Amino acid sequence: MSLSLANSIAVQSRARALVPLCVGAGAYLFFLYLGDTLLQDSDSFWQIKIGRWILDHGAVPYTDFYSFTRTGEAWISTSWLSQVLFAFSFAHWGWAGPVIITAVGVALTAAIFVHFLDAQIEAPRAVLFAMLALLLSMHHVLARPHILALPVMVGWVGLLMAAADRKSAPSWTWLPLMALWANLHGGFVLGLALIGPISLEAVEHAEKGRRLALFMRWVLFGIGALIASCCTPYGWRTLQGATNILSLGELLSLIFEWMPANFATFTSFEGALLGLIAFGYYRGLVLSAPRIFLILFLTWSALTHVRSIEAFAFLVPLVLAKPLGRMFPRRAPDAADADRWPARHVTALGALMIVAAGWTSTSLYLGHHRFTFTMTQTPVAAVDLLEQRKVRRIFNAYQFGGYLISRDIPVFVDGRAELYGEKFVVDFFKATEGKKPELLPRLLDEYRIDATLLVADAPGPQILDQIKGWKRIYADDIAVVHVRDDGQAGVAPGAEIPKDARK
Image (cartoon, rainbow, N blue to C red; front, side):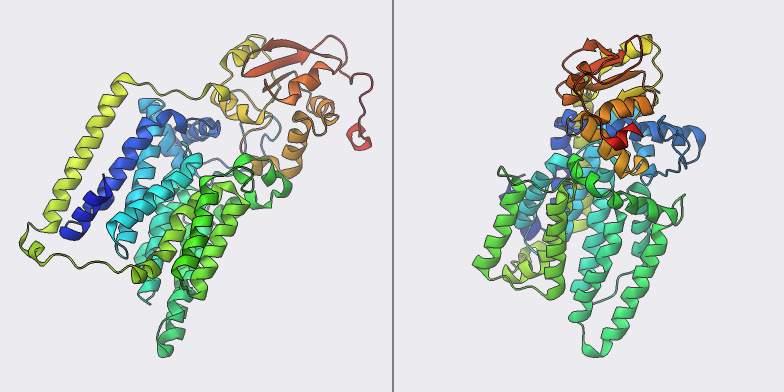
């Protein structure tokens, strides 16, 4: 859909709701076409596996039963509802199911985003912001729960900002959104954190005589949102589970999506930041203190963890919408539109046509395309060999954990970093990535490992080649397998083990 068409629909027609619908449809078809790129993270395997377990048992997990290193330890799933949706779709349509609901999640996000922006700025600019937000988020659009929670995040913040722009309190009817978010993904804590600064924006511009009453209504809403976030099978433990990941310290710098942004090469995020700064200087954009805080907070979050870039991409424009609306006033609709077919009829008909076209396109595409998971995350041949040898305790690479879980093989480690803890996973990475190779034989002996399954191009396999008592029995472009050799495993001559590793 061109920008001129968006402008024609939104300004010259009363059926402005078609603009978000068209944007959402475009986003859906785009990510459906790129569906294989959504299947690149092995976490999708264990997410689906847990969702299948929940469906089979009619309950949610409270302990770990997928690893042999943390079996029986307390663990809760803060994304249980998303996992159920992924598992249900996978059971019925294979990998096409997770791809479709992921594309639907992105489509809803884009449509809701444009809907809120369109209330303040003209449709072409709203569509442009949506395109930029999707571009910034491309790296993290995966078949995982955070995408299903993304439209809820945009809707929640959009509603709060709209209330602040009206200098009013949020409606209690919005609280179910927080409950839904808390069941879909642990990122709901961001929604709770943003209530405070957004409330200050509403209070700051309200009349002096009603500021205290308005502030108290926001406080009560915040308490209600906190209670709503506990409306999950886990109750108040949902909050604890959602914040556990933030206490992993050094580990967050080792997992890609939790790493800080890297500007060693030019990225779209760097371009967006520079563009935002340049626009502020060039146009003399003046913001209130709460809006400045919100932008700085979202920018800091994106700089600290790359997975927060999509929150920056979708929420910063919502914060800037009203100031931009004052800077670029909307054009008044054509008076001749008053006699046209009622907008609700046009919107309903357009929505039906868009849904029908989307369903037809999906059916035709699935008729000749089969979605497959990226091979680098699925060491099929290596795992087949380990199963033939009836190996019980496998020291697996971090990215292979999800695939092993999908094949009902107990893992050493997987993507649930909050379960294993900072020290355990940090030691694992240092041992397998060559930063502290002397840790590797210690871990293999401590956990009585029978075989290793490591990434082919990582230092780990080369280190194992030098350790006595281990031999390489299989290697391909994806994985390398070592098993214990006859006799006691030990360290090759010349290798040193620190004192703490001998304990």
